[in-house]
Amino acid sequence: MRQAAPVLLVNPGRRHPVVGGEVVGEVVGEAGPGVGPDESPAALHRRFPGYAPTRVVDAPGLAAELGLASLAVKDESERLGLPSFKILGASWAVYRLLVGRLGREPEWRDLDELRSELTPLGALTLVAATDGNHGRAVAHMARLLGYQARIFVPAGTAAARIDAIESEGAPVTVVDGTYDDAVRASAELAADDVLVVSDTSWEGYTEVPRTVIEGYATIFAEVDEQLATAPPDVVVVPMGVGALAAAVVRHYADHATVIVVEPLSAACGLHSAAAGFPVEVPGPHDSIMAGLNCGMVSIIAWPVVSAGVDVFVAVDDDAAEQAMRDLAQIGVVAGETGAAALAGLRAAVAAGTADVRGRNVLVLCTEGATDPLAYERIVGPHP
Ligand SMILES: Cc1ncc(COP(=O)(O)O)c(C=O)c1O
Image (tube, rainbow, N blue to C red; front, top):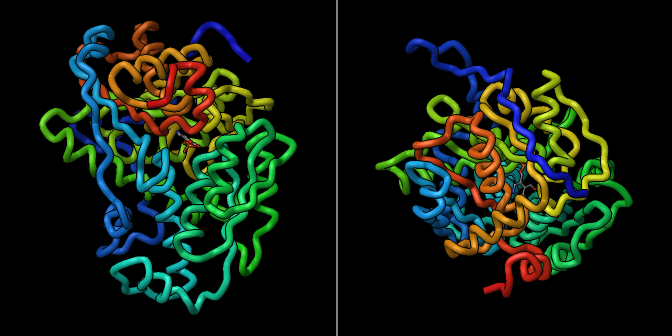
């Protein structure tokens, strides 16, 4: 579905933690279970084969066009061998889940040693629902650790995204419904030897998605070093269920403006912020920004997101396509979802409501060309 005008909401629920130098609210939230003093998501990720910080691309031309002091694009098109940031949350969540089952911190230097440490757990199957990237990441983790995986996707998922999950050795079930229906189908399989690894949460299922949010912190640990001399004072992030947005809020909300971006047809964050409580946006959710086609916010992300996000922006598919082309101009290969944040930034600048002019802006480009045919149609040949 295509609609014309972007929609923008200045969050009435934004709770700035610092007023007149006094801390008046806790935006950051609890660290959650699993983070011991010696272990952090970044420490885990650094131990994975092929770990390297993703790059930050400076975009002075776009910054000038949009009236910003600077524009930095964090390029998550290649992360630990996969085309999106999602492996950061999936890997940390799977790891903490397994360590919890093991009942002690395993000692390992490489994946062979980790697999051997995990032998007492026996055969396991990891299950996830996904619009593409999270499920692929869970399937990838299962393959690395020698487990089975089973992944559920909503109807209409691009063939290339299904193929990519299957290339990790995981069977894919296409659910006749939305992403939220796929989540429900995956949750039903939970059993002693079947572990549900969801990036969203619901009543009674919060621990794993909390660790997913923690896992994303690696992005910001890297940015802290990469932009040490000019830290961002505006951060723009795409939002599906809000797990990534919650991670952004935790890291940035007490010193930066946080803008989240959703598709017009699945703007569950914007509608929930307007209502003051989580609101389900009914499907079909058919935006090309597939990773953001979620009708319901994650219940553990929502308190963090609703207190720490400054502006919710909803954009249409044309805006995402334009942003993909903009990013290609600066050498960033972005998928439809990956480009959403830049689309939202443009909309925020055009609306003039969000105070972004003259500021240092960080845009999270969260995926590469996960549907190469779509990329060719929208941008041109895939490099
Ligand atoms: C590429 C990409 N960016 C952003 C998001 C949104 O993340 P979240 O669902 O945590 O809001 C997703 C979710 O699938 C995604 O795949």
